[in-house]
Amino acid sequence: QVQLVETGGGSVQAGGSLRLSCRASAFAGKVMAWFRQTPGKEREGVAAIFTGTGLPSYPNLKEGRFKISQDSAKNTLYLEMHGLQPEDTAKYYCAADLVRGGDILDATLYRYWGQGTQVTVSS
Image 1 (cartoon, rainbow, N blue to C red):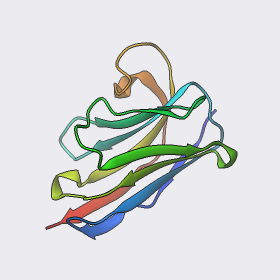
Image 2: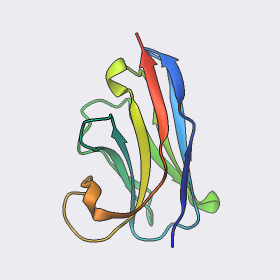
Image 3: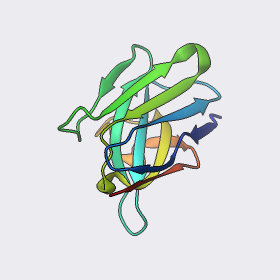
Image 4: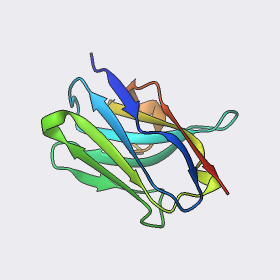
C-alpha cells in the first residue's frame, strides 16, 4: 500500500508562488501526478511525472507557470507554482500508481491519493 501526504498549500496574492510537497511511503508504479479540484467541479489534472526517469508531462498546460519534480531519495514529489491566479484556487491532490493505459491525467486511472492541500489565490 502507498500512503501520500500533501503539504505546502496556503493563501497567497495573485502573482505569488507556492511549492507543494507530496511525501510518499514509496514510489510505486511508473507515474505520479498532481490534480486539483474545486467543490462542484470535476477533478482536473495538472501535471504528471514518470518516476523512473523524472520525465515530466504537462498535457493540460500552455504556460510554464507550474513545474513538477521529484526527489527519489526522499520519496517526495513537488509542484512548484509561480504567477498564481485566482483561477488556480483549488484543493490540490497527489496521486500515485497509474493502473492502466490511457490519458495520463485521467484521475480514474490512479489507485492511491493523498488528502489534499488547499491553495487559495486572492486578487
